[in-house]
Amino acid sequence: MARNGSTRTVPEITQRSPSANTDKDSKRNTFSGSNSKRASQMLKRVFTYTESQEKQDDPPSSEFQRRQDEFFSFLDDELAKIESFYQMKEEEATERLKVLKEQLHIMRDQRIQEVLSNKKGRTQQGHSHKPTGFGGLNGSRLKEAFVGRRIGKNSKALAELATPAANQGQDAEVVNRRRDFSRRPEDAANHEVPYRSAKRKLKHALQEFYRGVELLKAYAYLNRTAFRKINKKYDKAVNSRPPLRYMSDKVNKAWFVQSEVTENLMAAAEDLYARYFERGNRKIAISKLRKTLKKSGDYSPNTFRAGLLLMAGILFGIQALIYASQHFHHPDPTIPIHTSYLLQVSLNASDIRHIWLH
Image (cartoon, rainbow, N blue to C red; front, side):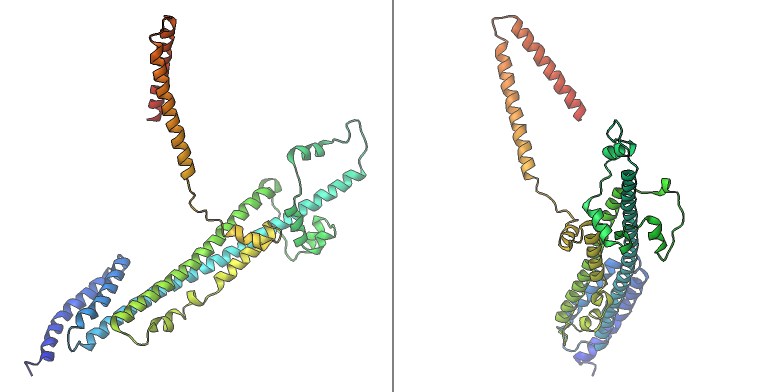
């Protein structure tokens, strides 16, 4: 029994097991400081272990089971971290969409009140207007002519999206009485934001929100692809059957794979952008939201033009120097003096430009 090949391998493995346990304890102590290094060492050790052990006739099942459990516990930890991070970002995106929706409603209500007050003021001015020698150019009309308080098509579309009370020509007090909430009184002179400024900021905020949801969706897809590739490589290394068992048992049942919250958030953002900024045209809204990330442009035409102008400047400079050198031998004595003066001025100017550039 002492000369049996299978019994000779057992003491060798028992001698290696304390070092393996110490390595495992040291990795657990330094897990918080070097997660990426530990992950790479873990995957390399798991995938290269079976290749070296295939040469042996009877690999020990206990060592294989220990390394397999360590590998799957590592995958479980990574899956839990991805799951918690994804759920946190999903909740943040949902809350942010609620805030954006509330701000868009406030912008719409303020614009409707502004449109109604303008209509009411114009009707009152039409009834109380008296012709004068200035042709009716009072202070308010002069202000409108210079400031340009024009009601655009988007404002009219917002009025159509509002409550039926706005279409009936009711004033702001009637609209406020029909609401089921009341706002706190604030100083309008200090807290009133212009409509165009609010519209521009909310438009940019909605575009940033849409881009963030797209990144969250790409994050989920990237991690799912990573788990799939790791599982495929593991199955190939240990010849596991059935394949992709970890994917079907845990990854495909995870929240970041099955969740449809990102799709709903993107659809809601597209609907809000179309209603408030594109007069209900959803196709244009989607195209504008998906073009927020500008691609790197091609600057080769600009480079070609800059090089062409630089070469032309160098050629003209050389030609000017040749032409100036010919004037030094002119029979008229004043021309060489003027030529030397102009050359000195041009050289001094070039030195000044050189100093400013450097």
